[in-house]
Figure (tube, rainbow over the protein chains, first blue to last red):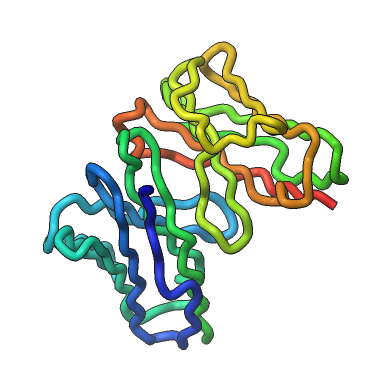
Length: 111
Length: 115
């Protein structure tokens, strides 16, 4: 059965800290891995990763994929209170037509 | 470009009552998804439509949940009768086609509380 596992499930840090969120996956016919940020509403897209070892970067956020070890990490440097959210990791299902999500990591950044 | 619209945004009902949610996807998006997100968990796909046909409803509890997309645009998701464990956020998403599942756009969700 395809699955996505995220860790930790929750994290509390102080502003300015750097955090690393983890996502491991077991998916038949892997195509891509996606990261989303979810505040109080709908998930918003952050990154899509398809190739190993190539870092995707957007501001203070970056992510990388390891297809050999079947995991990805999301890094956030110099965290701000606005980074407080649930971070979701997802992959396409076996058929490639829908997404399978992990449980998410709830990040709380205190000032 | 207008996003995915959902209504209502919040709904509180008692167990055994019925409830319906509505979703209007982005114009031109053939694929529509309904997800259930229980507190503390990631979204779980309930049903996926391609135009007005069902692609995947393997995780839809068919004894109480139903969904339709009669004209291939708007969709409704119904729960009848509701149980306490149905309390969740119901997210609708759309994409141009199934091959672009990684390019889904999500609506704001409907938060359902079953008392």
